[in-house]
Image (cartoon, rainbow, N blue to C red; front, side, top):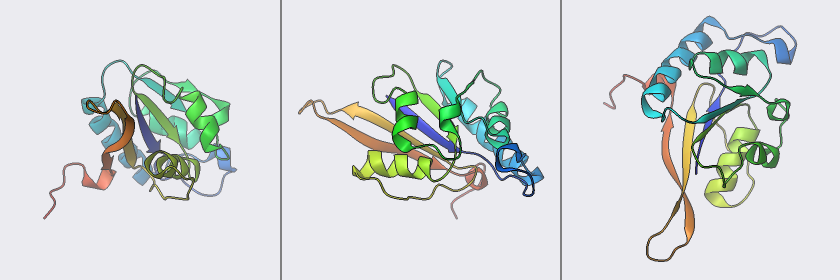
Length: 157
């Protein structure tokens, strides 16, 4: 299984938390990341989204069908999010568009086996996969890619 953790792009301040819309910068971040994701995701994948406005707007940039799940809101527990994604049994990739600290906690939990507060920046994607090792048959998690909107189209000079 593969799980793609996509933190919502930058949002405006001032509204109640669940009604905060993306800023101009956030819309650009979401569009850049959505273009990159669309080119790299298989056609068939689930996209699960927090009900907050900024996460819905981030997911809308992808231009694919998605499901809004109340359990993925700003106060989500990492275990609840993993359960919603059907980790690790889901057949195809699952994109989670959500919030800190849950997304960082999920990355830490899957990569290190312990719940820690890792930081995922606004608009960034962390793509993790579970694979079976051919020789031992053991399952392991690896990090396929970490991508930020700022890196899309940039060189590493």
